[in-house]
Length: 361
Image (cartoon, rainbow, N blue to C red; front, side, top):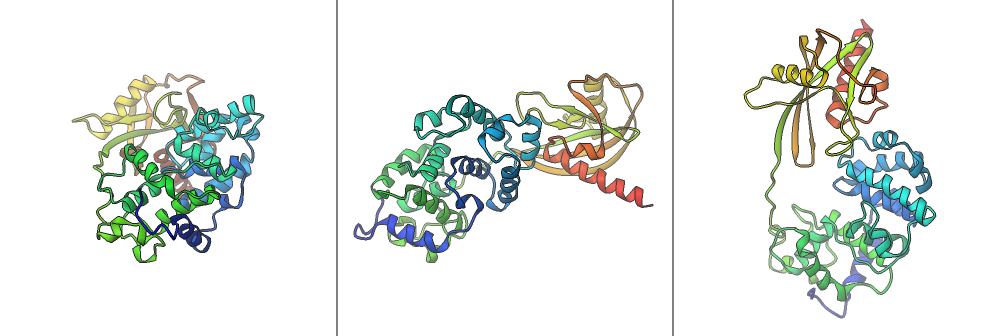
């Protein structure tokens, strides 16, 4: 059980702190389960400051489950572009269509029904049902997990496999009402005070409950995780025909599914970047490059990968073998209408700057 003075409830102290110190965020002004759902999905693996403009744009374009369900996939992917972890948005679209078909475009109050929707894990299900409907489901996200590990004094990594233990210890301290606010308060305390590094313990409302604080171990709980980031180098061909550029669509399954990109791919061992471009164009377009000119280098990260992407402007010896379904010749302006991986979008930024310089002369 969580330590502390039983005469002064943890929930009472926490809620008092939250009323004074919580941030005014756009999704906190509503009880609409759809808006809460969208915010929770966006906030997974993404910072609050990064999410706010995406959330506001999303709500203008897709203000309801019904409208989202009818939206074309490319438009939805384009709106999400830059948030990463694109399975999240594909599950949003799938779930919206199920909700329209089976639940009259409403998120039901039933835990099992919601949990069975695409993209609704234990956290998202509990968050939406508690915040929107005030149902008694506690949540554990990264911030709450770290907070509870410090309170209980468990010197382990912040791994979901310990969530059952943490929830069992938390259970006696859950409020009899205001469950949604309690969950938000736990997440907010973890985000603003009980931070991963340099936790602001002197500003915390719960020091009497916190074993890590009492033993002087907030910096070592949770134990650090080993990161297995893989560094990748890739090269792409910028192929232009008059004022149009050639792009191709990624497969509908796997990483960055259904996004568009420039022809190219991962650099192999003992291969130069130019050799990479030539090989990829040969494999993908069944022709050879010529007059390759280096344009720019960009970096971006996704999941466990750190990618350095090199772009080369190339001409082709023969017309490429392309399909209408998978390839497009489009203008620089039209490129902005297609969902692109972050690296490709940065190359488009470069091409736009280059075009402005040329046109200004």
